Image 1 (cartoon, rainbow, N blue to C red):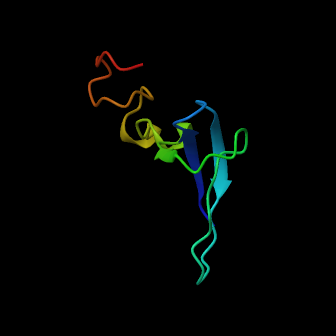
Image 2 (image 1 turned 30 degrees about the vertical axis):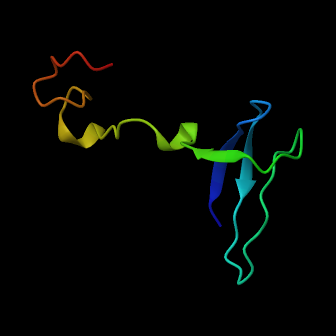
Length: 70
């Protein structure tokens, strides 16, 4: 079951919800104020670049090892 991050548009609370696969559509609401005025946002774990150390001997993600990415 995926975990989604939501932010309440009324109070600004940011929270995670575990979303299961059910026939009934669950009613999502803010855990702090109870508002249903919430919006799904990107979770911090899902944002970022893939780093594959197997591409070069220097361990850099760039083939030349001189890219400005850290």
